[in-house]
Length: 126
Image (cartoon, rainbow, N blue to C red; front, side):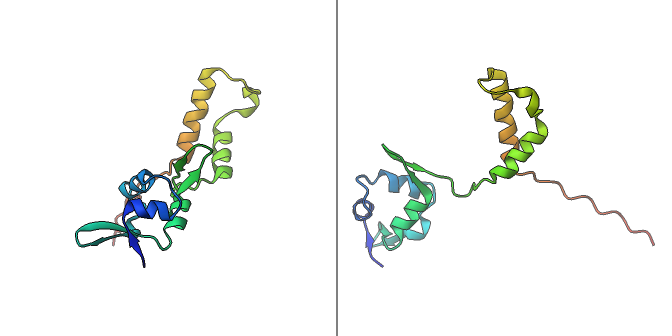
């Protein structure tokens, strides 16, 4: 595999700046591509463009890092929020700020995985 400096690697994959690569390296998203040679940090370019594309999203004026670990099941989130809210009483937008706050916290709670404590084992009597 070809290993280049971060600046040269950024140019090789079509980025005008190395700052995006530095940000992804700092976030630990490109650990598999980092190598050290002669005390210099280099980055393997084979597969790098695909890896960067996978964790970023192109915008009209810049590139934004996307959290690929948080693939949301929006159907499930919507069903959870609908179960918590009395949707029929909400009416159509525009809504008052209090409703937006309520909706925000419902979404946050619905997207947060619930980690249940394991139930304690019952003692077995002989």
